[in-house]
Length: 237
Image 1 (cartoon, rainbow, N blue to C red):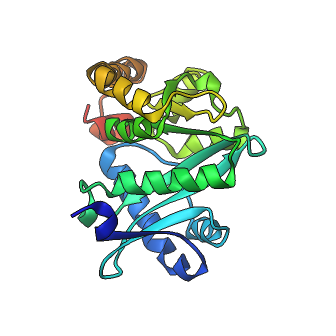
Image 2 (cartoon, rainbow, N blue to C red; image 1 turned 30 degrees about the horizontal axis):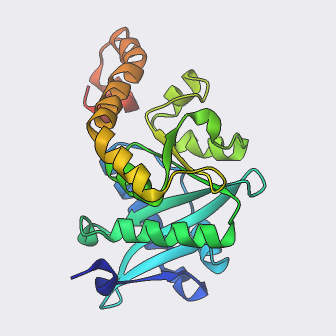
């Protein structure tokens, strides 16, 4: 059965604010399970996005919450990020994330037709979805330089790496859709499929290379297991 027939994907509003707590809890649990960080958001912040019509929410046929994503703007609306994409565990691996991303992308284009839409991700699956929408891999210099955006990375386990690279690189891959200068989705999709193995290898190299200085510091410590860093705990070193 097609995803659009299995789920309702709606522009969120005041009537959905009661789901904010479960959404935030699932965002935090998912980030912890993946060993990655996210910009932490409170239920109040998520509710605000719903009231402003800057979020989409998904339900299954029985009215059970299934997924969510919201819009953030930076640099006075010049840049837009589709943030907080989350799918409830019971509904993963069925195409819902892709459908939500498509819906929030369309909403972003409608609300901010001239804005550059960007994202940062460590996941190949999200990169694939973005490519199908017309996003291209870019350097960090092409993203917003709004300090408020980068401050949101402080809750990520990789923040120390980001700062050590002077915000020019990190574990995440940056992707951008520029409405004034972009390839067609079919072209970016084909590029991703051709380069998928290379991108996957690049993600592994990044993880190995960027973690080395921090792992070296740990080895120079006293070796007490109780003093394991967050890097060691998450990456099992």
